[in-house]
Length: 158
Image 1 (cartoon, one colour):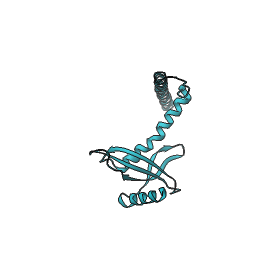
Image 2 (cartoon, rainbow, N blue to C red):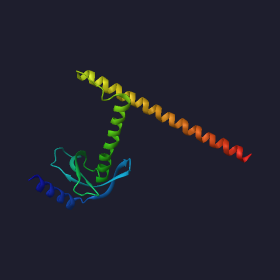
Image 3 (cartoon, rainbow, N blue to C red):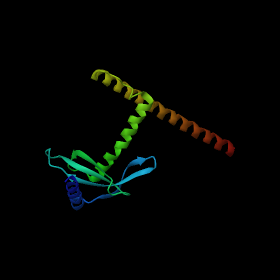
Image 4 (cartoon, rainbow, N blue to C red):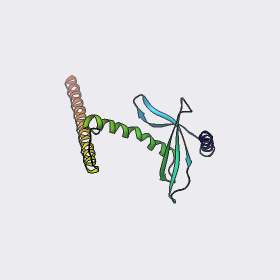
């Protein structure tokens, strides 16, 4: 039953909007993440200018491998924009993985919402501080390397 419904939904998506072929969903560790995308307007739960869609991501190498997202956005949002926003999921997940490893985001044994909220807030604040520190350090290293290159080129020219 569910398979027939899904097949009908997908064929409807192909007829109405077509698949957006090989759209990038962000950069991965092995290069760009490329997928085919389609969307189907869902039953109108909101009044214009807002709308709900079922966003469908299909693997290029295995067309049976699909993921689904329910989206809520202005009704003028393009399929390319929805695909780009869905691709941000990996960036957010990498941020949480980093927070777990560097600031102990997952080491909370709070017994109340207030304790959990304080732990999460402090952990994310610490991650923001470390990220800023890392960016400044990288910038300083780049500046130092470029000034060394300039000194070498000036001494070679003299």
